[in-house]
Image 1 (spheres, protein in one colour):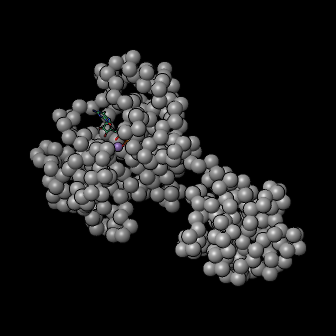
Image 2 (spheres, rainbow, N blue to C red):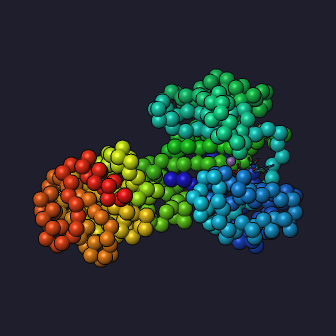
Image 3 (cartoon, protein in one colour):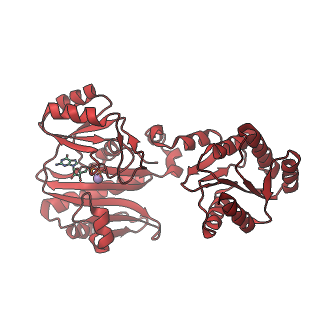
Length: 386
Ligand code: GDP
Ligand code: MN
C-alpha cells in the first residue's frame, strides 16, 4: 500500500528522522491558516498524490509570500497533476502539504527497501540525490551505493559509518547520518514497510532533513497494523479495483485488450505469460477467490464486458474442492445475458464439474469457444482479440 508523503513523514518522525514542520490543507483557507501556524517567510506547497515526479510537473512550489502561497494553493487544489509517474489523465490533487521551506547545501538520496534478488533488506544511497536520480543511476549504476543488511544483525555501527562516508559525509553530518539510517531501519521493520525512500535528503546548517519521503507498506502485513490500514487513501485506488474487492475478486487493471478470468494467482500469472508469448496483452488480472458465489463471479464478468478496452475474454479455471467450474459458467452466462455483450469468449475449464460447465454454457446458448488446454486457450483468445 502506498501512503502519502505527509503520512510517511509523520510515521518516521517519532523515530528521530528530522522532517520540515508541515500542515495538510484541503482548502485555500486551510493553507493560509497553515502558514500562520508554521511561521517563517518561505514555504513549500506540495501536491499530495501517490506518484513521484511532482517537482518537474509543477506539483511542488516554493513560495515566499502569503499572496504566492494563496495562488499556489488555489492553483493546485482540485487540479489534475500529470507527472512522469501518473497516467496521462493525471491524479486529482485533493490535498496539499504546506511546509516551512528548508535552506540547505546538498541533496542526498537514501532509501531502505526489500531487495528481492538478494532476499535482504538493503540500504541504498547516493551522494547526489534530487529529481534526476533515476536517469543518473540508469546511466551510471555506480552512482547508487548499497549496503546489504544481514538478517538478525540489523544495521551495524561500523557498516553505517562506512556508508555515511560513501555518501560524502564527515564529522557531525556523518554521525547524524548513522543515526538517521538506524531510525529508518527501525521504522521500516516496525511498520513492515517494503520501501522508505528519502529523496532529497537535505544536508545543511540545520542538519539532515528529509524533504521528500515515499513509503510503501507491505499489504500482506497490514493485518498486524490496524493503525496503518487507516492511512489507506481510497481515492488513489483504481475504482474498478475497489469495486472488485467488494465482490471477493483479486483484480488488477492492466493495459491490454484481453480480459482474463482465472481462479488462483499462479494460474493468472501462467495465463498472462501464455498470452504474452503469443503476442497478446492482458487487460487485467482477475482472480476469483475459492469461496466466490455465482453472483460474485457474474459481477467480475460484467466488469470485464463493461471495459471498452476488452476485445476478448479468456476464462481459465481449474475446478477444485471449493470453487467448481459450473459456478464460473453460471456467472459467465448471467453476465453475458445481463450485459448483452458480443465480446468473444474463450473457455478452458478443467477439474471439478468441467463437463457440467461446458454443457450449461451450450444449453444456455452462450456462444463461447472451448479450448482443450491452456496453450490452446491462449492462442484462441489472442486470435479472437485481433
Ligand atoms: P517529487 O518531485 O515528487 O519527488 O517531489 P519532491 O518533494 O522531491 O520535490 C521536488 C524538489 O523540490 C526537490 O528535489 C527539492 O529540490 C525541492 N524542494 C522540496 N521541498 C523543498 C524545501 O523545503 N526547500 C527547498 N529549497 N527545496 C525544496
Ligand atoms: Mn522526491
